Length: 288
Image 1 (tube, one colour):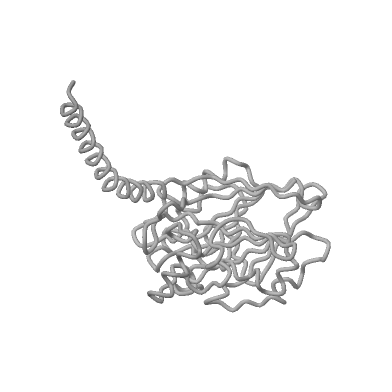
Image 2: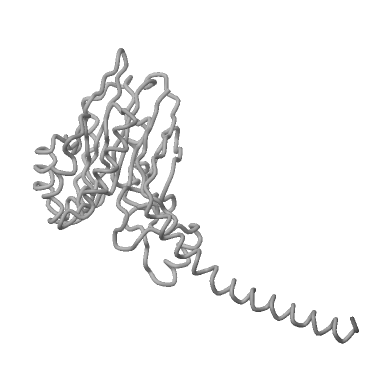
């Protein structure tokens, strides 16, 4: 092959490489974008194991941000998640607020939460208050769910006890910390339910072994905190409203002053915007 022929062949190969590179540059971002939305449609079960001698042996399930709305939208997802939780045989199921996303969701509470042969406890979220807390509370009671509004309940298993304490929503409710903890002996481990993660910033957080919260939806769209800061400074919009701690740490297990807090991404697949690389989840917490 002559030098000219070799040059011509290499030139054709170079053009092909450029074409392929352009296609990848065009297609790859679109593929990543679409995959992120698809990824956010699949519910998972996440198991968290926590060492605690006094609470050892207890297993609980937690779910947040159900956001049931008009026409039963979200009810089937809630039912699926409850069945997923039930298969792990927890001692109780805890609902961490925003049970409904509007008045139309109240009628779906009983059908969504029925048929579960486990004790279910709940706390209200901001959407429950905005919808009408009295109506939501009645619907939960009719479904066999105990709503803990600045209230508590003691769970017993063998010779061990844990306290489930529920605080009213920090944004839209009337939290009464003294009342919520009034009947809790100091030697019993406390699991504090607060829809808003900012419970970890209150002095009473030191009374809890574990705080369970939602509200953040895992940030809706996954992105580093610095990126959220830049978007907020440019647009003035926060994807996660009215939570100082949850805005900075929208998902996962953290420890503050020897108190653990787990912020779940919730179970609704869509609220305001679709999820992107943040999956809905049911949380199973095992104490050992």
